[in-house]
Image (cartoon, rainbow, N blue to C red; front, side, top):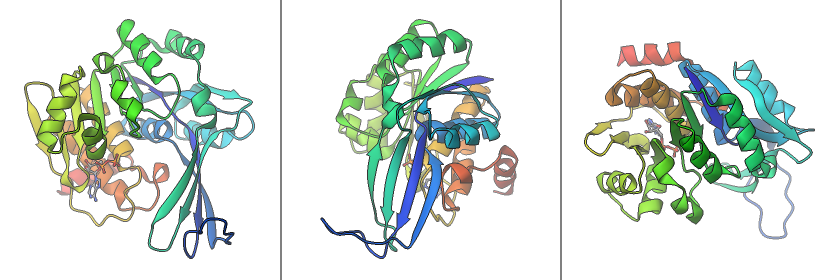
Length: 296
Ligand code: ADP
């Protein structure tokens, strides 16, 4: 199975402080950590760990992007369509206090410099992929979905993070729409998950998968609705839960598994991931996920 993940590749810089700074104030931090991130990177790794051949596509800075491409390569992901430009790699400055409250500065950088010509180049090379998966952290998402759909590729969209422009994405070009509850509520204006998935389906997507955090996930294809609970675990850090779920669940669906089986696999992988601090680095291997599911 071949999957093309067109998305963001980000450096996360995490500063732990005694407290978040006031306006105009300078504070020393207690610790500083650098992590790989970006929804494209996380979902590419999750898909790879679930068993797919993954081709990452996107853009990083020529000088500071190797940290990310080396990490993907070491994880077995093909990086030949991750272009390096003169711009800076996308990064996030994350300030965290001891209670876990945070504030962030997001810099899209190279992720937001992808052009339609580059999208064409990517598709020319990878139109044989079984699925193209994208999110909303790069430029050209609309273009990529429309083009991929027009040439007959199967498409999946995780319309995240939510910004009002997400409401105008070409949902009729999306075969599988996968998103979390607050994103679904923001897009549709509905509150109840059953109403949210129905309203999302009306936008034109083939299948809708709505994740509900510790309450599980719902699959709706217009006729059948399948709901699967989350596993009870002691969550340490839920960052990356949705990305882990997305890679594993979509891989199982492409593999011909039933919606219930696919959602359960996604939930198992995400349950393990949330027990560990971190995101990309803590996505479990398939063996571990299968053992976890066997024990339940
Ligand atoms: P996102 O990370 O995009 O906000 P969710 O919070 O909906 O997405 O989480 C995605 C999936 O991860 C859920 O459907 C669930 O299976 C799993 N998950 C998330 N939080 C927990 C938790 N506290 N305990 C167990 N599983 C969780």
